Length: 199
Image (cartoon, rainbow, N blue to C red; front, side, top):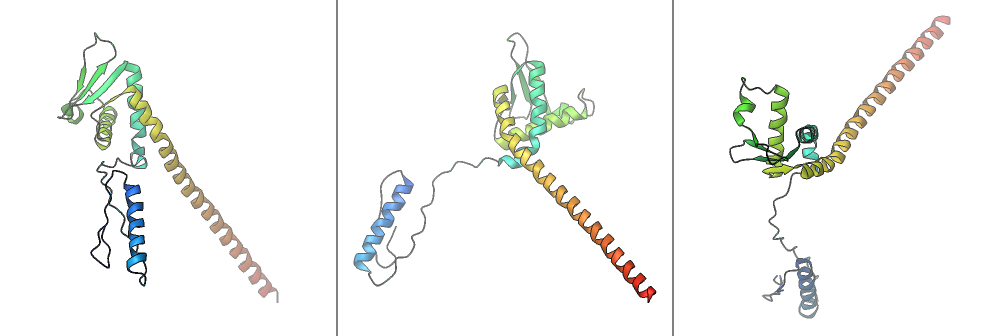
């Protein structure tokens, strides 16, 4: 960090960015009070964070996958599954809890072919599941992780549903008010006409 009025430079060596920012601001403030008393101290720019962790998808954007994950959980329970893994070709490998059970593979061809033994509902479920894994940056999921994902997404889904319910409530309330206003105007104009005819 440099002083904007002179070539004085201030540095801090250490890993704590917040502490570094505070100490640099203090050094610059002290320098200003001693060297440039007549000018106000400008606000120093914030330090850039070196955190390169890629942000995960916000929970609300993934909430529409909740029904798919719940269906996959039911599949886990019904078939005693340990893990489902997606390989680099996009094929899903299902590993069962029984050590003597062979693994099962669901290929891309099975999900796209019309001659597949899967119905359209199953195909949609597995395709959405693959989309979810991709958005989360995962290549596999076990039962415990699946339960955590579902519990994580449930509040977000409830918030979305609540938002939709609120909008519907406002529309119904607005419609009722509109109908009442129309009825009120009708009766007022009718009474006015009767009053004029009675004269």
